[in-house]
Length: 268
Image (cartoon, rainbow, N blue to C red; front, side):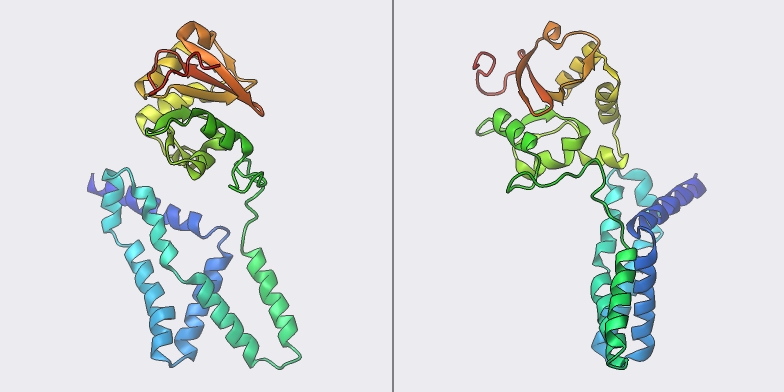
């Protein structure tokens, strides 16, 4: 039992660190930079900030106490935020400048260009993901999200809506009163039982209408936004959901049995 807890905890912490470091190059550069400062600088303040502090952060992150925490707390995924304390950019740039400064003046442009290329190679171009899109407005969220939220917001209260995966990360960026039965954690593979149930229904090729409706009502979600090519096993209208409007490639429905603070059912 204890052995399983420790192994599971270690694997989770180690996996989180691997996910944080991307392809690994940036962490290698950082560790090399820390070692460079440790052996080449005598300034105590610089060493405290750029050497000792990162070491302490890594020690805290890999403390075995987290292995136990991971097995009993659902919010364990936020542990990776400890790694945000690592001054990676500052340390790498500091050493980068130090090394270039020591070079012959003619070699500095070449060294600078090589350093920039290495830094670019250490990253990953993330905007090819289906969950990112070009900014369409000053809010930097898809226009569909702006229209959906403006349509369903009710002054003085929160309202809940289910939306397709590609809109999940944007809804709460735009509105603090429009809520979701599940959010970005599902894109990270993190579920609770009720989340997995409701998401499974709407991820299916053909949505099981009666079960999906029950799940929505059990989670106090009166609004449904689906892609306009979504297929249901039965009409939503047969279960009390009325068509409201469409935005871009999305259709919106409202539960006629839900009380949302105002009479929206016949407002069109």
